[in-house]
Every structure is written in C-alpha cells, then in structure tokens.
Image (cartoon, rainbow, N blue to C red):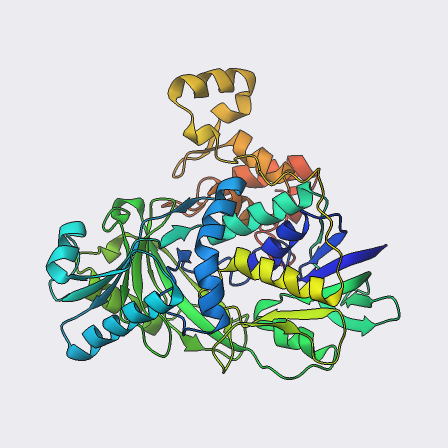
Length: 478
C-alpha cells in the first residue's frame, strides 16, 4: 500500500510524531532498524524535563523547549507515562564567573518566557536540599522542570499510535530512498519496500546517513556519548530536585537526580565518539561522573551503584535542532540533531513537523475515532491491598511475583508481551515492566521472563534473545 507518511526512526521523536499524526485520517508507517523501539538515545539518557532557561533565545531549541514543557506533561498524563515535576537547581560554587553565568541564564530564561525562575542563595537552597554541598553559593531555581522515563514515554507514544492505526516495522534498516512520481519508495537492507507520499527523517545519530540517501549532504551529525551511573533506591531520596552544575560548552554537565522509579541517577559525561553504536562505559568516564556528582552532593554513596550505562546523542556544529524540508527533495522533512532538550521538546517538535508537512500539502483531517489515552500499564501497582486482592482473584497471574527486586508479577509481563508495541525479547520486557532493573539486574527473574516470552510467542527457549538476533541466552537443552 501507499502510506501517507513514513517516519524513519522509532525513538521518542519519531514515536511522538507518529502519535500526533494518528489524530488524523492518515496512513502512517514507522520504520525502526532495531528489534524494538526506543533503542537509541531514547533508551539511555537523563530523562530530564528541562525548564527552558538554557537555549539561546531565537533558536528552535528555545522556542520548542518553552512550548514543549507543558505539552509533554499533558501528553505523558494521557499516555500514563511516568513523569514528575520535581524542579531543578543549577548551582554555582563560589566563583564570580559561575555566579555571573547563573545571572545570565536567569535573564535568558526571562527572554525565553520561562515562568517562576528565581535566584536563591546557597543557604536557601540547602534548606530545600540539605544534602547539597556547603560550597554552593548561588542557585538558579527552576520550578517547572521535571523528570520522565524516556523509554517508557517512547513505548507509550508508539503503543498509542499503533492502537490508533499506525503501522510499526522493526528490523527495518533503511538503505535506500527513491523519489518517484507518486512519492517515495523506502527500501530496507533485507530488500523490503515501503511506499509513501511523504517521508520524515527521525533517525537520530544516523539522520545524516538517511539524508545522504537522497543526495542531501548539508549536515553532519556529531555523536556524543554520555556515561551514567544508576544507584539503588536506598539512595533515591538523597535529593528531591535535579541538581545541575553551571553548564559549559560541552553541555549541561554532571547532574544528580532522582528518577521517576525511585533510584538516583548521576551523569553524563560528554565525549565525541566516531560510531553511534559505541555505548561502552570506561573507568575514566565513571570516575569523572562520581567525582563531579560528589562536588554537588558529597554524601552520595557510590557503593550503591547497581548499573552503569552509556547513551549516544546526536548534535551538529551549529548547535540547534535541524527541522527543515530536505534540500531539493519535495515532501521530505529532516528532524535531526535533536540533542538536549529534545526529550523535553518532543511533543512540540512533533507538532512543528506536522505544520511543515501541512505546508508541503499534507491534508490533516481530524479522525473522530482517535483515542489519545493509553491504558495504564502500572495500574496494578497503584491499587491498595484490598483492590489487589480482588484483582488477583479474577486474574491469578497478577499474584505470581517474577521480579522480587521491583515486585513485578507475571500478569504485568504477559501484558507487556501482548500490548502494543509488543515486547519480543528480555530487554523489551525490562523496559516495559522494570523486571530485571533492580539490585540483582535480572539474576533471578531472567529465566522466568524467558519462559513467558517462549510461551506467549510460541518460540523455543533457545531462540529467546536479550536484545535481538545474536544475543540468544541458551544453546540447547541438556
């Protein structure tokens, strides 16, 4: 069939665009080269909803960050994606230069239209955050900022899009885009072909490669890796705000932040890498994270680290988002170089992109059957004990605990395998349910999860993977 719109890349930007397009009478196809959605920067980032004080006034980043905060909170609520408005602190450590930078950021925030910003003393900040370093002298207080789970947001947006008719094709590595009289043919490395009237390039760190397929070479993505350490929930209440240091040209620096799931997150570094697939952590990077995080919050107990990871975000030399029509190619849009605050801006970016498509001629007629609300995948956890008891009597699988660290039950895992977009591997279950994200990191629950995947998908245990082909966990039965 000929789709109205094909989106290349199923991260949070492509996923949110698909969800916003599903409001209209359009046929939309979302293409992803990996085995699941949210497998690039959307899988491994800070999960911060940035207040909007930082982007240079007049840039797309400034415009879409300012618009995007409330849009994101509203859509996340509709999708039942975990999000919390906890506010953020940007800290200066006693130097005149850093304090002047904070004053400049405050003024920039005023120009960008960010509400309720204030400059407070270190003493005032420590009254709100007792664990904050005694060396903090001045703080930019950003009440509208927050935290969100980036991969759950992406999964929820794409699931809602699919529930409203969007087609998702995974393991579809685009290696050819050809302009035709009717539109485009988009070919995969495996020889599959999808046709569409419009194409939107949301391929993250690979968006320049997708642009080159149509002869558009005007931008080059600079992949930048960031290493993080995640601490156990025993450290999750160390701070309530997201704690930043004064930003540098390399980025917003090392943060200390609670997560929506009750852990404590520290990081990231900012290192240019040659290959976007380079997501390894290094002793040097993790030492830097611990050292600089301790500068802000000295009492963080790094003996409680349960995992470390690295994510690669895409940037470009001009420093702004690239959201423009393709050069010399009708009916194609590039949505590229979406680094921070891209997650915060994702709904605003989607809406902005739809406006560009309308200018190109895309007809957007509202679909009265659109349902923007997604069933809450964590509803069982939010029940009281009596409600849980009654629910378990009708649904016995919800009474069988699989992951003891995170208290995830069999019913939740089976639902994650059945619900759009379905989990097809161990990590897919992990991102949807948190099974395997606790202290033991799947040491106890993984075999049970594998059995459920085998049963639900009628797949031999030997073919169950951790994260796609080549990551099979079992060789043969003995």
